[in-house]
Image 1 (cartoon, rainbow, N blue to C red):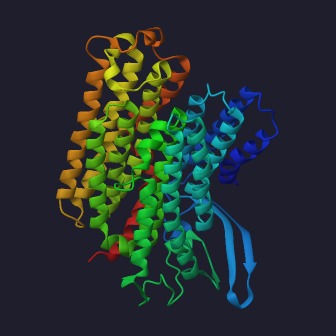
Image 2: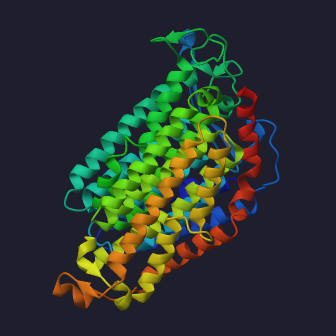
Image 3: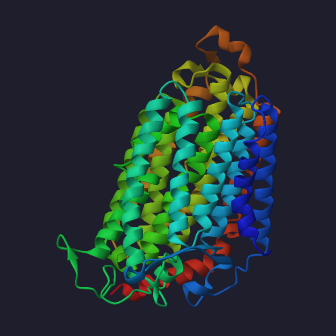
Amino acid sequence: MQNILTYIFILPLIVALMMLFIPAERWGIFRRLSLATVGIQLVLAVLLMINFDSSLIPENWEGAFQFVEKVDWISMSFGSMGSISIQYFIGVDGISLPLVVLSSFVLLIGVISSWNIQEKAKGYHILYLILSSSIVGCFIALDFFLFYLCFEFMLLPMFFLIGIWGGKRRSYASIKFFLYTLLGSLFILVVMIALYLSVMDGEVHTFSMVKMLDGAYASNTVLDPGSPQLIFGYSARVLAFLFLIIGFGIKLPAVPVHTWLPDAHVEAPTPISVVLAGLLLKVGAYGLLRIAYGIFPDVAVEFSGLVAILGVISILYGGMNALAQRDLKRMVAYSSVSHMGFVLVGLASLTAVGFSGALFHMISHGLISPALFLIAGVIYDRTGNRAMENFSGLAEKMPVYTFFMAVCFFAGLGLPGLSGFVGELMVLIGAFGSDQFSMWIGILATLGIAISAAYFLWTIQRMFYGKYFVREAAWEQNMLDLNAREKLMLIPLALLIIALGVYPRWILDFSDETIRFFTQQFSLIQP
């Protein structure tokens, strides 16, 4: 298993480089290379999971990570001004491992969904593989500089994938996505530099996130917990935490910095919506959990109420907007805003069950949301239209499609026995059991589940039941049930949604010890 994380991380970049030397007119070979690459990536990720020691009880963050690879990467000395030390430092623990496996799986689904893309196929698949490597890199990076590099590299491929292969308003959507996420990245960059100047590895400043998590601060530095320095009347640690909330909150996204998401989803091609909803949003949630909460636990306790309120606002606002939509894909996009609000509530609870629920909900949503966008893509591929009022009684004409729609919609609204229920239940238990905020946070979050039931059930009633009807007669000949490729994508997603709903220990067993250790730092801070 030596260097397995490097293989998972680097393989897509190597294949993308190889594609540069293949003639563009041989478009079929690009999709086959992409499929083989992410397929190998998934196999390696499963091997990683099989060989992961979930019984390991960490005593510090240095011993919490497995499959660690650490090599000096960039080292520069500036004499009396000091030096810069950047390492190729990667590893996984019980928090990042499930996300690495999820990434490999969703990326494979995305390639299958991309199978019919022929226009500029060479550029598309090169960008897709760069995006694949960047996403995985964010989850395995233990050097903040490497994390930030991967975080930034996600922006460019996604910008071009939406801007070139997207819908009619693709330029507007891609620019809006880029500007929002770039702004968030700048907030994170400021915190990264401040942490580098404050954290020491021996006698040298370091970007090591392990040292940051263990609190290896040099005395009297700007982010030293004991430093009396104030910036605009606030502690630097408070400002750093708030900067991270803004930076990662944009990627999550949380209301009110969410407005880029519906436009990006609606204009993105279906495979990119799958990856965007299934993985890129999880990078924002992971950054909050690993970096904001992991490195600044003292400030997280102080602002738990604020984070919980942001989560509830996202749940309710996203849900009400989803209820008002007439475009199926835009409705699913707003449902993502609503459901990712549960992650914020789980984090804000500062309880082990809340943290576990937030992580599980990330995994669950990483399966449900890609399936929902595939469901929307099926209709669009056949008609070029997604307006819900243009369809009725689809269950009569497309029974298999209706079955998968029902599984995904009911998972989204939190039906027991499906994965969506487990994550939301754990988050709500954490919210009601937390002493960080009022029980009204839990009550309002529960109301969000009722709203999600309303928009999902209303969509089912409008589009799938009643008398069969499609708006345009020309669409009639295309209203065929799922083909083999569509089934190949939806069957594994549906099976995993059901499997995790029936046996959630499959994921929780990997994260229990890490989450328990992670939660200890908050119990020491709370009065």
